[in-house]
Image (cartoon, rainbow, N blue to C red; front, side, top):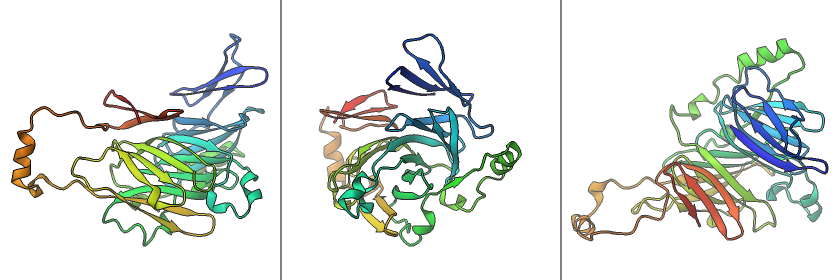
Length: 314
């Protein structure tokens, strides 16, 4: 279901997850299996996995919204959380650099600690501090007339730590879950983010690129909403979305994309419709027509692949 590869001073290891929830390892230079990470019972099957920057830890996500932090040196779980959206973890990415809004001084840039970008819930990706589970920055897409700004503080995603000291206590916590306090936020069916890629560097060059099931590729700036835009997925007559920033406190920030819908066909002028029908063969629209499945950054640009069986280079 998920595959990752890393090199260590003594081995070249491939990690892959299976439907049974276990993470297996394979040393490419040896037929033996170095280790197996067995997931906690009841947390669901693996849907995503990401390696830490120092290759000493890995974080995995499941179909029930659980995240597990593994120590690869001791081959054991360190922490387990459940995402407040209670939906599948679609994609994970890791970073060892603090978000730009916490850079109080130049030395803060080098105060590295583990962070995880978690794509879960309705068109939403959050950056979480794995030391305490707090959300440092959230990137969310909502309808144009949605009033998320009024109660944005209550709807910031959270990670609730699940204790696993004893099997009986773990089963009780997994059975109780987080309740339905945020169930009203989630509609019965919603678009989700399937691909995330980006970089955290200088103050003016930190960005995140997301691809979702709505077929849109969005470029997010960590600080400036005017630098955010949609590079692919908008219909011909669909207006550009608006971006805004909500500072909840000194360490937590919410970036909102308000996506306006396409105007109905009856609002077009009849003359323009007639001209469009009579213009004959045209070039194909330069966008994906189905869900974005993966994104990769390359030296020459951005590579995206979609469920419409196309791969595009931007």
